[in-house]
Amino acid sequence: MMMECRDLTNDVLTGTPSTAARDHLARCADCRARRSELRALENDLVALGRALPSRSNPALVRRILTRLPKGGAAPASGWRWAAGFAAAAAVLLAVLYATRETSPIAPPPAPREMVAVPAPPPIENVLDPVPPPPAPKPPVPAPAPVEPTPAPAPPPPAPPLPAPAPVPVEPGKPPPAPPVEPPRPAPPTPGTKPARVVLTLANVEGPLELQQDGAWKKVVKAAEWDEAVALRSSDRLARFTLPDGTRATLRPRTELRILSAQPPSLSLERGEAFFEVIPGANKAFAVVTPDARVQVTGTQFSVKRDRHTEIYVSSGEVRVSNDKGEVAVPAGNATSAKKGVVPAKPRAFDTDRANAWRRELDAPETIVYRYDFEDGRLPLPWSTGRLVNYGPPRGLNKFCLQGAPGLDLDYLRMDKRATTYRAGMKVRFRYWARGIEAIWLQFSCQRTQDNFRLEVKNIVQGKWETVEMPLADFYRLVTPNDRPVEGDRFTWFNFAVAGPGGDLYFDDIELVEPQK
Image 1 (tube, one colour):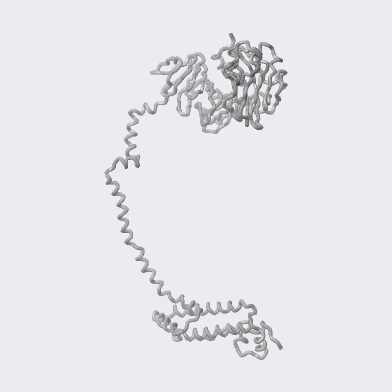
Image 2 (image 1 turned 30 degrees about the vertical axis):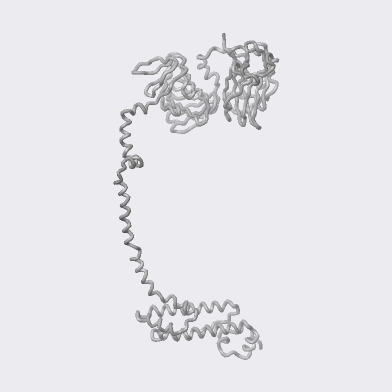
């Protein structure tokens, strides 16, 4: 009967093979190799068992000599490695166990007997762990951690040596603390001068007064306004201009104080004031009352202080805040604020009616024509332009004129009085732009057979802005010194726009002239 690989157990391979086993071994190289490995492993274990000191544990030696693999067949070649590693592990554990149980005298004989036996590779691996004696040597490195090296610690005291360096000026510079202490007392004496905040008042109109030595003194044309004194208007309107170009108009019996000069910040003690802040990059202006703080970057608004604070925004946008919250107020809207209460949500208001009081300082005007488009129809003289009611919100107004790419007003359809130039005439309008690069206003003149034009400066993006342009500032492009003269007749009025695909809306377009 023929045998297969799985029939060759370890006993068959390590013992005297039968005829069938010999026939199979003659045919199968793998089984022959397996038998050779088993016999080599057996010889190694026998040699190892003889090498171990029998007097230390005779029973252990006998067990090692008799522990030969007698398990079932391992058809896979991987068994060879498993058997080898298992045997090596058993030997390793046995050696470690024997080594630990032996007396301290045991270690010396072990190396002597091991030297006598030619150590095969597995034995070297097993004997390697024997050098635990070197383990105590780590204590020797313990002193080695160069405890003396702390001796260099004295060099760190060397840094104090720079202290003796006779350069008191140098230490004075890096450590500002000691030298700064003397300068701090120094300011107290001249402190009033540096701490003094002053704003220059220019273009003063109306009865404006500064409080000096407990008395109110009238300001004529210009003056310096110190933070230590209050500024007020007496029984009539007053107006002045600050150094940054901001113009303030005060109602009668309105009082202001300075909080800071850079950026300008004023405290409204009582009354009502209208502020025209010039737009500009990195420019800020604030008005503070006991109820709220009004922060702007370029706009026209008024603040009224009575039992609470009212804010009306004519152009641009302001932010009103207090310790309870903050609200943004766009053009054409108003809000109110009271101490300890969140500022109210914006509400629409009539800007012209709310700000009519401040025009008392201006010369009375006559409106030549005015278009607010609130009837929902495009007026006849406008030959181009589209009337819409979905433009940006602007208070109570609903309709506005879509301005891109341009607008044309046909003067030939208007009364002669509206088309004749007179000194002092001004065109005034509101616009809202986004993505617009330039806006030009042009009047076509019969006398010159050319256009008088003027460009809107610093176009504000994303909010309603009011613009006023005197016709006397318009000029011809070819001859800039050529300006309109009394009696010139205009044939049409045009808004020209530049900007790729931008949005533009116009509202409240009017032409006015001063009353004679």
